[in-house]
Image (cartoon, rainbow, N blue to C red; front, side, top):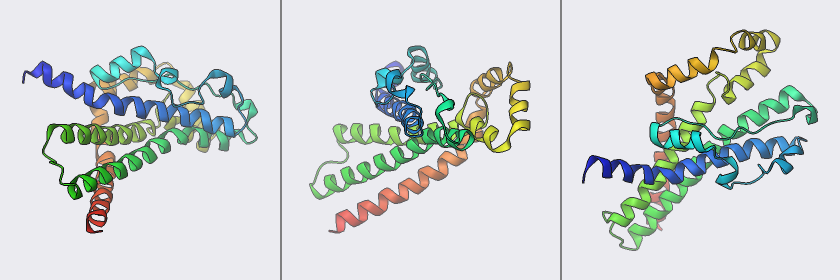
Length: 224
């Protein structure tokens, strides 16, 4: 198999994870805002997990090809919030939390697939089985990366909203002071690979926890 073919196959395998991860992330932001009073989310069409409503074409293409990108940001109208700072924090963390929950859900599904295959005598070394499991494992990793990445306190990532709301006026002023530089800093960190060192260990910890969860489920289900 040529390198180009291998790359194309890998991109196809990670495609479902990207679509699921980005869509559930942006939907969670919109749903949280809606529940906290921002009715604008309804007519903006963001109260759905339909990828077409959340995917930014250029951001999606870059994410698929270069490994980094973006979705359409959810526009929040905080005037509807009863407690603006608290509610903004809730809306901000809703996205990363949704990715964690999705990673857990897919881990459980993966464990069930393994268990049923083992009990049913399915060849776990077959190409179809390997393809299905690879898609699921990529989806788990992508959701964990999206969770940790978006919690970094650099604009426009979710973490900066949380830190600014908790830190108050001085922290917000700090962000505003360097407003013209945050995008450049973010791009440099991504292109240089520095983010791999920043989020890698945390993603690894969550991956290990979910792997233990999957092994536990498999052991229980196959013993029944």
